[in-house]
Image 1 (tube, rainbow, N blue to C red):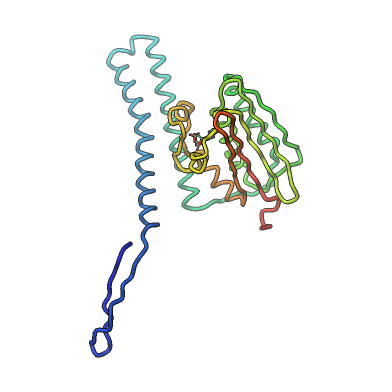
Image 2: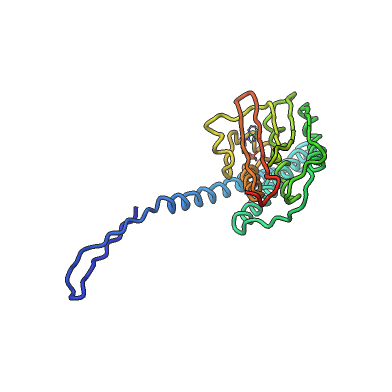
Length: 261
Ligand code: ADP
């Protein structure tokens, strides 16, 4: 609490009392501490790849450049780390744009099937590398009133996470169906799962259950924060159910008609 005291003086300069104002600054303090955490997180996330890029470049200049094998492997690391930084900066700019200006959504009828097929196509190599199989059940008539670019971002994040957080040989199921008022999409995996304590935190910026795994797979810890913003801007909700070592399901519910509350 912040406490201010002001004397109350009557018209004849007589002392009538004192007004004490208690100002609850818990929320302000919380915001301030979130801002500080955010800056610390961003700095840390940028420092890690830049340290590695610098280290490998220096080693190359110190002579490793003449060793063909080291040269190729170091350059590959440098490339991967710069890609990480680029993704991080892109996600950060995206998130700050969303959080500051809210959303400008270009609403259209977005058919879900082609969007999801397109994403599967893009991620197919990644699945093959890990020997992950998938099923997909999305009727071609299902559509959402939404922004195609943003919806693509949502499903790309969720399906990519399903692949990253599932062991080799795992399975992913994507299905969509409709109820009277809603379109419901499930992205399900039988991967590593998330413990009940972590579930409420995964939509926070930079929150990651396993930093090393996330980082190795190119994750920034911002994906789900962005996904949640996008879904809410569409008037939808996202729910996660998960069990450690069994798997995770993300369920998204969109209203069929955006303006019907
Ligand atoms: P990241 O870039 O780290 O994947 P996200 O914001 O997309 O960041 O996800 C936040 C964290 O939530 C991940 O680091 C991971 O720990 C957890 N997570 C997300 N999706 C899954 C999933 N399908 N299975 C298990 N854990 C998941």
